Length: 128
Image (cartoon, rainbow, N blue to C red; front, side):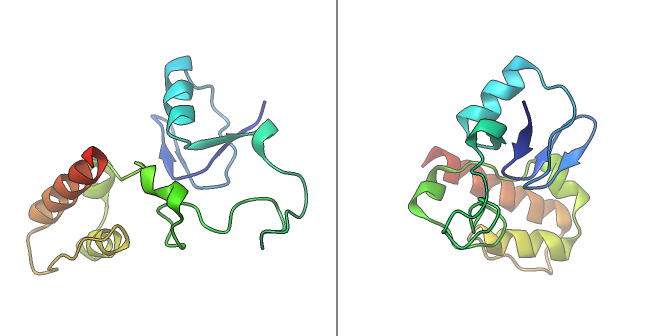
């Protein structure tokens, strides 16, 4: 069974971008977590050929968190970046990411404060 990332997924060994096949073996707990949150697409779920939705390969035109237009189905998406991923980003990237998820930040703030603001914002969004 081929499993593809629907969103950015980071495992202990590698980062997967949307559309990439996950080549490593995932635990049943990880698979259940990814399925529950719709973070992966299993081969059986991928449509073959042109789908008529503007995407010739059957993938949706917009994947949550990639800058595309959000749909109502995307509102429940909780694939926000975690603290580790945010700490790897530059201040500019954090401010840009924050804007993508609906948070306006001041680039003149210290990086630790930017990360904290994004984490607090995403935590509140997941609770809502």
